[in-house]
Image (cartoon, rainbow, N blue to C red; front, side, top):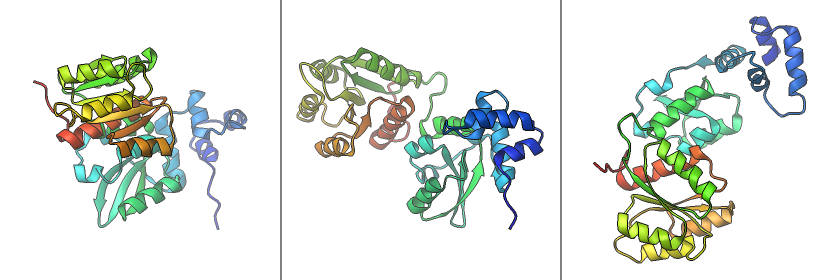
Length: 283
C-alpha cells in the first residue's frame, strides 16, 4: 500500500517551500497544536489558496472558488445550519443524485462530515476551498449581508448594562445595516420597546432595577410587545441555562462572551423565521 505523502512533503515537491524552511516551520509548530498550514501562513510563506491546493493534490480532492458569486436555494442552505457553516467552515454547494457537494476548508474533518451525513441523510463529497471563500459565502447567503444602500432594514433593541459588551454588540449589528436602539437595564428596555416596537430584542439576563427575565415577562404580558422575539444573552454558558431560558419562552440563547459572527447569524435567522427572508423593511 502506497504511503500518502505528508502535507509538508507535497509543499516541498511543489516548490512552494524549501526543505530548510519546512524544518523551521515544523519546529515552530511543535507543541502549539496548530496545523502546519496555519504556521506557514503566519510565517508569510504560503497563502490560503496554496494550502487549499496542496490539500486537494495530496488527498485527491477537487477545489472550488467564487462560492459567494453563485445563487443557492433556501432549501439547499437549510441542509447546513448557519452556526455549523460558520464554526466548521463549510458551505453546501449542490445536491445531485442524493449526494451533497460540500465546500470545506478541512475535508479531513471526519466528525464534521459524519454530522452532515447524519443530519441530511445524504452522501457527502468534499471540495476544498479557503476560509476567506467560506466566510464571504456565509456572509452573503446565510447572514444576508447588506448591500450598499440597504441600511436600517430592521430595528434591534440591545438591553445590556455592561458598556463594553453593549458597545461591541451594537457595533457588530450596525456593521450589518441594522437600526439600533439601546437600553442599560430592563426597565429602560421595556419602556423603549413599548415606545418604538423594535423587530427584535437582545437582552442580558443579570441587570440592575429590572433583570432580563422580569423584562421578558412584562413584554409577554403586553399585547403590544408579546410577539417581538427576544434573544437572551447570558454569561452562564451551560446547556442547563440554555434549556431553562428556551423553556421560559426566549426565542434563542447566545452565550457570553458574544462572538460577533454567531450574534449576527442568530439575529438573521430569527428575523427570517419571524418575518420572512431578509426581515421587514422600515421604508
